[in-house]
Image 1 (cartoon, helix red, strand yellow):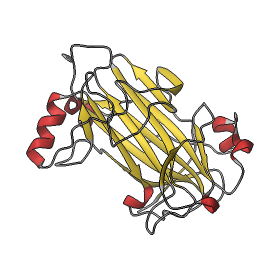
Image 2 (spheres, one colour; image 1 turned 90 degrees about the vertical axis):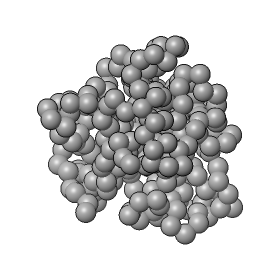
Image 3 (tube, helix red, strand yellow; image 1 turned 135 degrees about the vertical axis):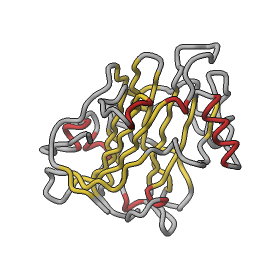
Image 4 (cartoon, helix red, strand yellow; image 1 turned 120 degrees about the horizontal axis):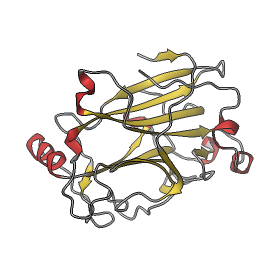
Length: 248
């Protein structure tokens, strides 16, 4: 069920980097380049988000970012031949829980709690409709690409069983994924502005509510407007007048 969220400002991470690479590289899929991420780092934890054009005018998968270099990605829905039940855009996300340790001896993925939230700007331009929010990692099974600081690009391991997945997140510090809005119970062809946030919490969050250790947010414009109109505008240009809330 969608939730209408009233307004305050999104909480930022302690260290936010724009137009960045993620570490150790993009380990999911085949032929995915690094770069065009908005990343946030706190201590040994790095998280990254980016949007990408998934289907071009021929309906062929494509990795084009149309990134403003700040936190906003813009895609024109009128020039895409996306397949049924698929959005023209994906959002890529990356988590590294031990980014500063080349020996991979620090915290692993399973030692934290996570929240991934996708919302859409409401018709009134002042609120968000929360499409979904959940912990995408602490589940019985997921097909995320998993590795460590030594994993080569496009070489992440994906579990095939529940037990294998539990072992992978318990013994590795890098996890990445690329998801399409069409994978979820949402209208994949809806135009508008989407807000995607990723948060990492201490393992005791389930018992003691607290602010996230680190959080990252990006904005995806799905509008039939030339990308150049949004160049350099970032959040203020994409969401003029919109107020955003971070969940508690």
